Length: 566
Image (cartoon, rainbow, N blue to C red; front, side, top):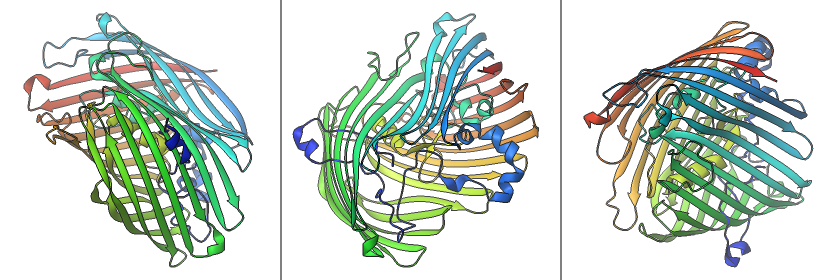
């Protein structure tokens, strides 16, 4: 029952409407297996293999998915660790010329916390990374990596608190393969996280091409069930998000850094009431939301977003359902990029849910001032192969998009944040599109597939992201990036794992008209020396080609390291 990501009204009128709802109703009506979109605190169970496969692959899954699997039993596990690494790059400043080499020593203490008790469910992974350069001291940096998703039960079956946190670095200029970089588990790890593809996204990137991005939300909510008749939910949510170019030695998450910084504080209250099982195949869900935000550096000063909607679902069969909704929205942004959307919303669609591992929702409607489609899909092709897909759109700043994705997140088996609805990737656009201020109409299509074989894990992801500037006098400039990536993880033996990742990206990541295509490739090898010690080696290659010659560069990065878990 994770509460929605948040933005909480600070005015009395906002507090009158309360309870955060995202994507769909929270009550679990048995007549609606395909239309109940839940937000579990951990990786959806559809990621689990069938029993025979799980037994055959027990060791491999322990290597590649240790973070999630450790939390299978009730209790608390706290795993401190320390990684020491040495990195060589042949283009430390990431310029076309002159190319300069450097050696970097990285010291990265970290901790993974996995808690599952009657009152608290928590998944947290935190790692500060100290980077000290031999030749270019201006590149020295203490970067922060954090992801956390937790739920506190204050009063059983009545009062809960949802907490979410995210911190990490991303490429300011975009266009480096779109492999992520936010919500990742860190550099080191005994259970396999050191070789997973997402960690390649910012390894070796120059300090001037990295932004510290963070988001934090806390959402207390009340949930009350009127037997089989209905469920009501009231919520208040507070969110703080920030992003800034890394200029100093130790940028702090959630803090206004003062230089090229963006901050966003939001408050939201909402209310939901949903009919229950007593109505058999029908379900009605009424929601009301009021949100208020204040910002600096994003292109607006204040914003409000007030919505009401009523959705009716009807389950045609055990696996097929249809829905329709109608409502009203009033969206306002003030400041340099003033914007107003005030109109009726409507939508309709269908759901397909043949088994617990497959759920597909397709819809079409009018929201955020435009007619648009929406989709969310998780399809179990076999017991070992999962396909995922989503299409999302909306209006907001880049920080609002980060906060919205954090709201959809669960902690996956490798310790990274994934889409709780599908198990697919989140934050795919953060290293693909450049970091920019402004209010955007955005569209993101993400497709993915993962197959787990006896010794191999194969992952394929494709995404298309577009941001079009909206608001007074903005000119409607667009940033568009299309990215495809492939990763292959292979278990060489019980102690050694290798991975290969490659990604290609093309588009206009900064919206200034300059087209960019890039190739990112990575090779990784990890060897476990003991239950608490592992060594690893990695090679990264970046090749960025821009229509602006000065923005073209390539780089080789070599890294070796050791991790001790305590």
